[in-house]
Length: 224
Image (tube, rainbow, N blue to C red; front, side):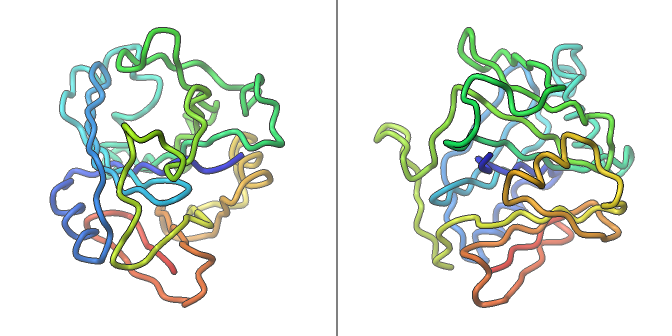
C-alpha cells in the first residue's frame, strides 16, 4: 500500500498554513467537505499530499453517519486524547485491487463523494493514540499523474519532491492494533515512541538529515 495523503486536524488553519508557506512549501487548492463538517488546505508533492483540516460545522461532524470516523474527537484532541491525524492509502500494484486493505474495514459514504463512491476505513478507530487509516478505492493516482483539469503545484522553494517515509510518534508503539501493524508491514509508515501523538514526514529519503518542527501550530515535524 502507498501513502496517498496525510491529514492533520488543526484549530488554527490560517496560522498553520502560513507557517508552512513561510517554511518554503507551495499551497495547492483548498477544499470543503459538505455533510462532514470540515474544510481543508493542501500542499501537494509528486507522490502524496499534506492536508490541514478543521471544523466548520460541528453539527455535521456529530451526525451518526460521520461520528463513526472519530473526526470530531480528533479535532478536539486536547480534550479527548485522540491522535489528531490520519493517513489515506492507495493500493500498490502488488495489492489485490478488488479487496479492501483491511479485513476489519467499514465503508464510509460521506455525502460529498459522488454517488457510489466510498472510503474503506480500518477498524482501529477506538484506539485513541492511533491515526485514522483509510483508502479511497476510486482515487488511485499520484498527484504528479493528476489529469490537467485538477493539476496542482508541485514545485516548492524547499525543493521537496516526494514523501518517502511517515513516522508516527506514539506513546505506546509496542501495542498496536492489527490494522496499524498491517500498515507498518506493507507501507513506508513507521512508528517510534514519544510523548505524542505526533507525526513526522520525511521527504526525499532525508538525505540532508535536517528537521523542522511546526509546534505549537501542528503536531508535525518535517525531515529532509
